[in-house]
Image (cartoon, rainbow, N blue to C red; front, side):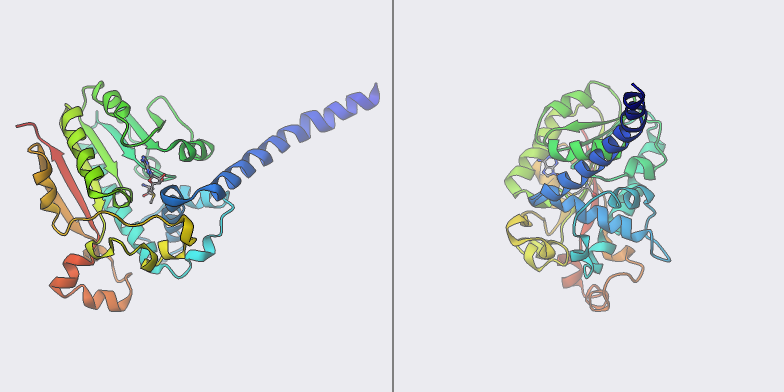
Length: 304
Ligand SMILES: C[S@@+](CC[C@H](N)C(=O)[O-])C[C@H]1O[C@@H](n2cnc3c(N)ncnc32)[C@H](O)[C@@H]1O
């Protein structure tokens, strides 16, 4: 009797909850290790943002990325030479943070959706804005991980589906509020036909005023994932290819009469001396500037 009581007190009450926490954290680790192809690339952007916290003059602050990375059992050391990507991811995220903050300031009742959100903590970085709703969408295996790292609330939740699924478009349109769609580090992995069809669909399905903030890969990188400093460090069979870019962002306007390019930022203009010296020199040449620069762009869907 006394033994059973002691057993219950010590084991069931104390150690079982502890074991549950350990098992839950291990699950996060194991699931991350199983990711390959585009889902695995979210570990690169997570690593880049977590690492930036240790920089004396950080391009962005992301304590949540540092917290999450400490729970993930993945060999991040393979990216240690990827200083170009590391700075690039943070320049991109910081530019998009500013665009998103400006949009939310102008439209406090907005519905925001990030497509291919990975483990990104933009909602936290922007101070958990009191928008109508903020969705972070990604494939089911990524959302399963995300749920272990972030807490959903009545105004912040996750969607486990593909960005090509119409269901999210119907969901956000039903709010009848201004819409902000963020797609960061994602579209470069799909071919032009898929990206074009996707934009067409957005123009058809999103009826309210919609703003899209996204990046466009450096044009010269298409077909060269293996030469990229961070993707090149992934296992050959797990590495996705860079499939899409446009030399001119304006070309996207031709895909649908509703599409309008509002803003374009060439990322080398914001590198604050962080890109390798040779690239900083080369970016001064117009030919190189255009073809080797990643861009952050803002489009609006304007029904005419
Ligand atoms: C490079 S990560 C970018 C993550 C995040 N946007 C960031 O910047 O940290 C690419 C993300 O796209 C997601 N992804 C790939 N295919 C997708 C699809 N069809 N629908 C939604 N997300 C997708 C991957 O799972 C991954 O999380």
